[in-house]
Length: 150
Length: 246
Length: 86
Length: 60
Image (cartoon, rainbow over all chains, first blue to last red):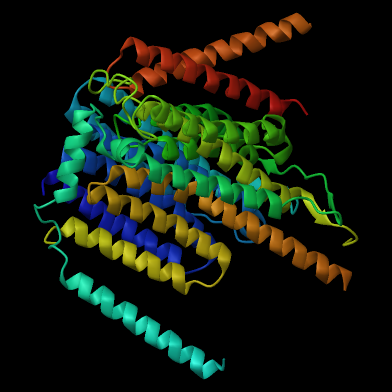
């Protein structure tokens, strides 16, 4: 264990643990938000783990999660649009906090790693993660209005 | 057979399986131990063929025949889906209604689609160098296309997704895998043997002999198969309706 | 097993998998399954298997929910049709 | 009019190709000739998909 893996453990136990609780209980509007937040908390944990194990290639799973996690939330926003319209999810501060956490982790890793090719990859991952999460939460809060046949 | 007898047979079978599993568990080496007889041999074999990612070497070189079986399973299941979810005589196609999608969400979908496609191709191309490979990259690339359904509507997706072409691509990629295997057989060694091509320089795109070729074939097969699979599901969920319902 | 990281991720996976079984509504189950896929990917990374983690992420984060929800939508539409015809 | 549309379409694909090529250069670890060739081909696929997707969404 080093500082990075300790930070990852804390993020997993606190953050992802809370999203597991949030997705397993409560009304639908809470569950979709928890699903979106699970991406924005697990992806920084994967980046911290890559740094902690000192394996640059472990950044690839984080990159794929940053790409496909928000896409998964869009799937729910699109196909559960009718149910979400009746009871739209509203948790902007939670979303901002989780996105801020991701941004901070990416920036810290960039500063530690120094300017090279790996830093570009980290920045791309961070941009995709933060942008994707904000857009996905927008989509959940009425950004997609579904039709029964669409 | 009565219900009681059936339950008894189930109980006996379950108890036997549980006993076997417990017996096997007691003989397992400890969690996180240092002795890895299979791992050590696999790493040695993969380094001898200059494949940086041992998992790719196992999938496409040491156990390439297993991967052929897995590919056939995917191929057969997609074939079964195509047959089962076809449009039957008492069904008709309804025009899908476009959904309202907010502008930022639509822009996000249009920007991320090519980015995800490129990432999928990157994961396929670097399968023998870093984590990833044909299966993972193929799924990412195929998922990327469906951002058009999520960010716009089904009609837009249908415009850039000629399903017939993807069916042909699926079959072509599956046969490319077979042909590479047969080339190994004709080249004097065995089916799917990695002896034909030079092993190249360690940790470059062309290293590993036939590993990158088989990897690319799997990538194309998986991407096309997922597109065809999702096309059948989307057709059923969005377009096809039972005749005379309304 | 003495690594707290492994213990934490194993507990997360166990909790999420139990929830996936306990939740009955298929739409909510798909949500739990998506989170389960993410936790599983973290577990695989912690156990030094990034290839498997990538497979899990590729399949579990978007493809499985899409297939599940499309099937649910088809079944619902048929149900509505039958109700109307009655 | 038709020629102008074709020209703007080609420019769009070219811009996407350049952006995706830059992304590829960020993703890879060591730029070798083969890497660049494969990257150029992959970026072309992505750029064509981007142009096609944009047209499929707007052309209704």
